[in-house]
Image 1 (cartoon, rainbow, N blue to C red):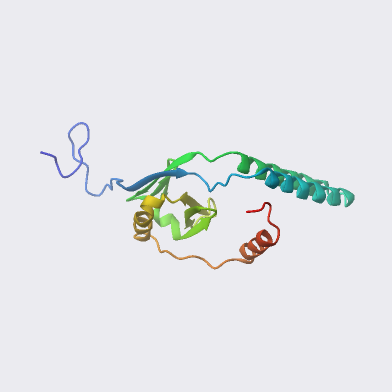
Image 2 (cartoon, one colour; image 1 turned 45 degrees about the horizontal axis):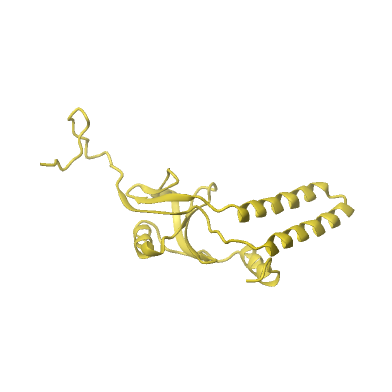
Length: 179
């Protein structure tokens, strides 16, 4: 016969005031959205970085040249390397992703976003760091994930900022590769 309350190894019962963390839902997915890139993408990034670098060299803005090179390198690294798989868990205490627990009271809201062919759940935190917790959705468990998180925090997409609108406009006007 199984006892209704967990017991310690020495046979002593755990007090009711202690909350035991239980996993509600678990899935494994890539740690970030990923899209395989063509040679055209890398060539375009290098060309833009080179042209901006020449203009900034004429203006003697050496620090900005370093920033442009750093962004070009970051773009290359993120596009060239596939993300590793991460285990996500929705528990009674919060969201555990990559073995780090974010408690429910740290979140304000969450929303869904689709990038390339990947759907993500983005949970906004109250603290500035990390700011958001991003989890790729397993398509087979999509409804379960939304329900499990939606039971604890509200599903509410914030309005797009001017940076969001500007980056969308720029990506539409200056594609880095043909789709």
